[in-house]
Length: 110
Image 1 (tube, rainbow, N blue to C red):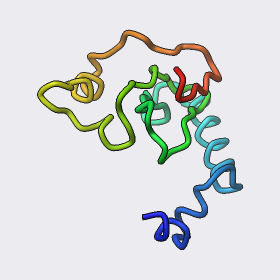
Image 2: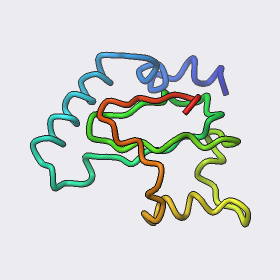
Image 3: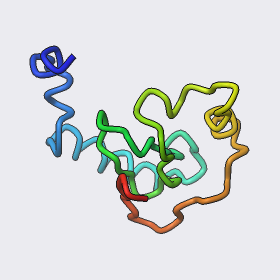
Image 4: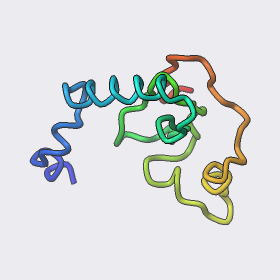
């Protein structure tokens, strides 16, 4: 998988802070402020504490939830009989533990 990502143009463009990502972030954050009633311009985010595939962060108007211990990039969104959190989260039934502070980027220790 790593070899594919090293040669993938898309993956290379999404590594770290790039002009493409900075431009996309600035545009999205501006649109979210200009159009506060459009929910699609904001995200509710939760990460697995063991996620090593994505940059853990948020845009200004996004809502972060604490990282879920014992889960990584794939398992955080896969419900099982013993882990129904993904279903509750998608249905909007998980509202406790919001990290409301503007600019909170969080990290694996949260």
